[in-house]
Length: 168
Image (cartoon, rainbow, N blue to C red; front, side, top):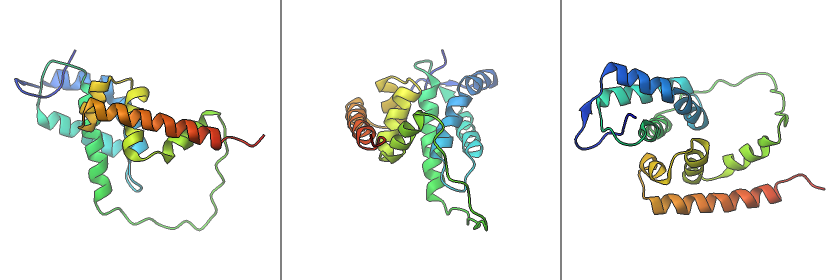
C-alpha cells in the first residue's frame, strides 16, 4: 500500500504516482464535484489536486493515499473559492425546475444544508469510508474533533429528514 507524506519520506516515482492516480481519481473527482465553487470545473480542480500531489514528490509508506489526496483536494477547493470567481453570464430563458427522481434526493438536500465542516467529515467518513484518523488527517484536525463533527452532523441530518419530509 502506498502511504502518506511525512518524515522519513521516499521519492515518489512515476509508476507509483500513476497507480495512486488510477486508484483514487474517481473519489477525488467526486469530492471536487461536491465542493467546487461556482464557475470552476471539478475536473480542473481534480487535476490541480494530483499536480500538487506529484509536485510534493514524496510519501511515507503508511496509510492510504486517499486521505492525503482529500486534504489536498480540500485545500484546492478552498483556494479556488478565495480567488476572484469568474463573472457569470445571465441566461435569458427559464431553467426547468428540478424534479425529485430518487428518494436519496432528500438526503442530498439535507447534506447540502449542513455547515461545510460537518458535511466534509460525513462525506469523508461515510462517503469514502475513511477511518477517523484518516478523516482527521484530511481535515487537518484531531480525531476528537472529527467525532464531534460527525455526531453533530448526524443529529442535524436526523432532524432535517424528520422535519423536512413530505406532509402526510
